[in-house]
Image 1 (cartoon, rainbow, N blue to C red):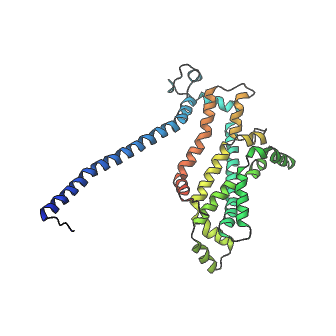
Image 2: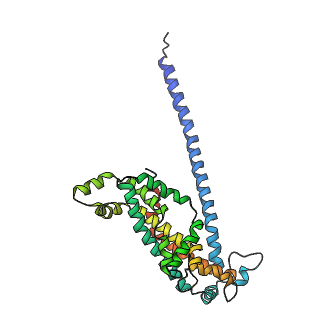
Image 3: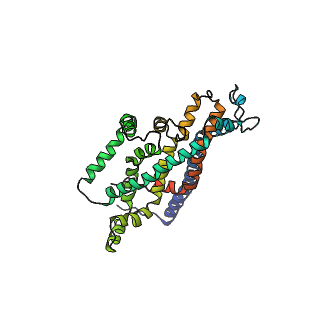
Length: 304
């Protein structure tokens, strides 16, 4: 049996559906606005929580020692002073150790870019027997903590006579599995047609690596470079063990020794000044390459 609506009934039903849709749309819009507002509030709170320690360090670095040690503590100093930085320079050679950190971190970063990129290219773009097994073993070594290998590595470096030298600091860090993994995942996402076209033009593997792959992998390379530079700049354990001479000691190891220096334990205001000196180069570096860093993190896939 078929039921047919009259023209008036059909028109009434159409108006009811349309009116119902109109009434639902504002509620959906309000829900979207509330959702975005909640996300924005959460992001602002997270930003404030993350930035608060940096703000405290910055203000304490320019505060008089009496105000830093006062109770209740004062966040904003009554007067700003540079005495903490002068005291810091009298306790440790800040400029020399900052230069040592730059040389150490920069050399490790450059070496890692070279060796990690070559290894990642072989694992991602070249076909050879045992490639998957080799990659599996490399990834498995990431599970071994560095502290477990610290003694044998130090013994090897000591036997080579590289203690208290930049060679001893840099060579054991010249390549790492995490960087190889990061670049391999990015290289996999690049079209294979690029390799094929270059081979048709007579290019060899190294020419393809240098002229085709690397120019298209700048975001991933800059991302890895930032990770390596920041990680080695902030590293404390390895430089502290490998150096006892202030002429080659990085800044982080020098700041760690402020609490037991020959001139006595440094006050908190001086330590905050040292922390600010150590932070600034990293902040400036991130400001310069943040665009490529974010792009590299977004494009580095998990294929393979």
